[in-house]
Image (tube, rainbow, N blue to C red; front, side):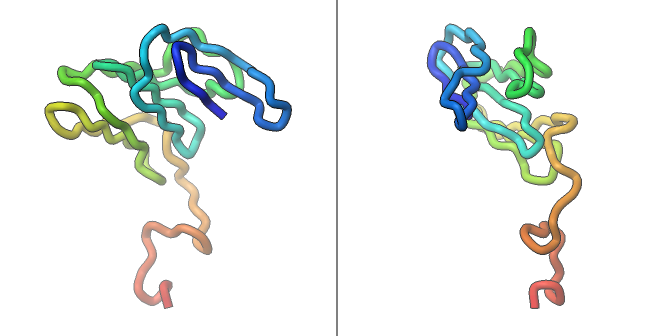
Length: 119
């Protein structure tokens, strides 16, 4: 579990214990977790993506993006390596390698389902 304030904390929800703390010292506007466990943090004009932040303490972000407008929201696209970002100037999409899970369960959530398979 992740919580954000002045610091971003990674919690072990089974033991109710903080595993890692990332000092941000800014107000986090939005936070998103991809299917493969990448963490996207948004604050103001900047977006940081951390890889494996829940496993080990990261010293620097996996990727960083700076927008010309204020970033309001972000969402990872399921089963794809894309991150959608809503800014004050419109919509942007970023390719984030390794953010999507290429394997999907055909009995649960099949994005390529045909009409015959729906029956």
